[in-house]
Length: 531
Image (cartoon, rainbow, N blue to C red; front, side, top):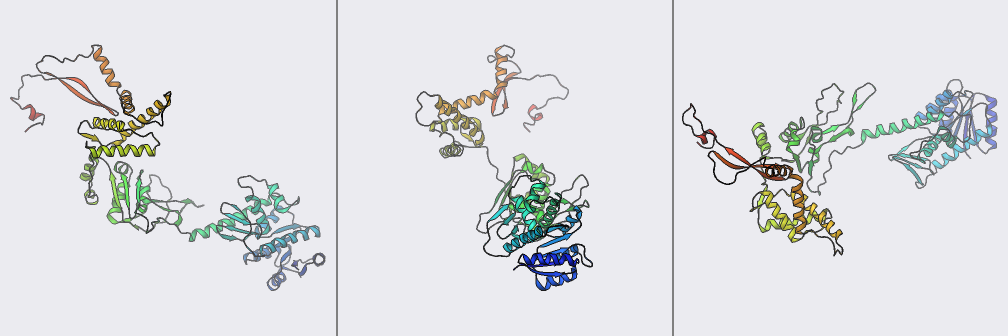
């Protein structure tokens, strides 16, 4: 038999309510004021409480506040003649499960208390975790009336649980106040719709309180390197100071100050590459202010110190300063010879920190071994990009074009990016040729003719200056003498580049001799071509 405690200073109403609950098979306890009610709650542990608001001494609001602050979640219904929305909101804010205004029907009051008791019995009934309803980090057990938020059990009233159940049952859908009110309170036109806002504020505060406590003890793994994993190889394409060292996320408080916790610390590429290799583009690194000095400082000290960058405007900065993180990394800078010489000359730390120079040549000898490597590279490209296979003749034509790019018949270019583009265009031409055939046999394959056509198309797209020069020669506007001899005049060839194409323009080179005042001179010496 459920035990109900009724607290009211009106003895007549107290007797009426006691008789009604006894007729409904409830064990009834009564108290004439809040102090007596608290003592009976402590001593006899009722299953539900019905309390008047306007009582001398400890009123209904104070009683509700004390119970909830003590962690007592016994269902509580407040009775009052105050029918204002503010009073009802206050009662629900303090933790009451229901709010009934006078005059009221004892049958309605009994029904509401019985509903609270049924839900309370389900909540404390134990058993396996029932069917759940989830929405993000919230998990609701409808059988046990249990709410979990990030694996933390959230203490809620029955009404709050109904509200969460209504909201999570239709995620992403905007619910109106009347619909929510009908879902959690039934057909009760007396209750104001704005009371939903009170329930929502209470739930929001409870969830935010869990977040605040959980954040204090949440682990922030800034770097995860398992012992059995290979050494990390990190390639940072945008090596700014923040990308190398890390960042601290900040939020502005109500007073305008910047706030940051340990969970807001995010490390950069230097920590991610700890125990391994960090690959950086030298030109990109030098293009970001402060990045080079941060890298040099880390390599010199062996520790990553997360510092906030200096900003040109006065903005609030967090007071959080993480400890320096010890790291053991190898840094590979990729750049050209000119940039290497510039760093070696201007930065005294550079030769001590970067001691190994790997100077790669742009050409390789034209040998059978390297021709085999060419074939392997294009086989891999065809497999990765789903291109038609390359025939032996196609590989030979690509190698011939590689020698043409290297500008010598005994060498092959090592810059395979240009040759890969030729191969892709040749694959496109091979597919088009195969599709246009009347009776295609098998699958398409890249042949030598496809490669030669791709090379011609590439030249055609880049030879506009050469075509214009040939046009000027054919029109007679530019004359080039190729026979006989002229005093002080020879023909030369000016080498020009236009994208992937390198070509030569015939040009006339002349020399004029005149009497000077400086005596005899050595032209080669003046041109710094001899001693």
